Length: 68
Image (cartoon, rainbow, N blue to C red; front, side, top):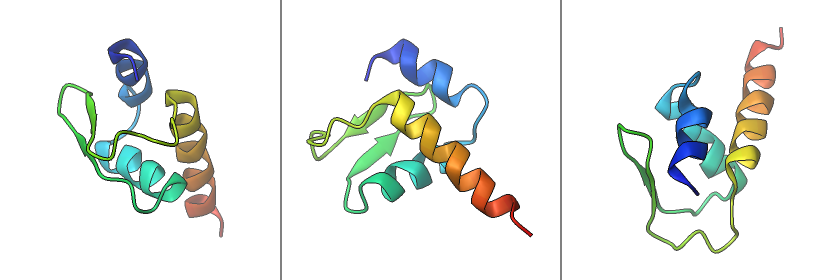
């Protein structure tokens, strides 16, 4: 992922939401999310998870959480 994509993605979300989204997309992914927004893919991001996929998954997880 490009740095700018990550910056835009995490601008309005908490880091735990980014990690939850990544783990939801690929449960066995090995990543580190740096404070400045960099995602370090220890597994090489073999499934090519994009910033858009992460943003979409965050929205989905938030909607599930907000259900009564």
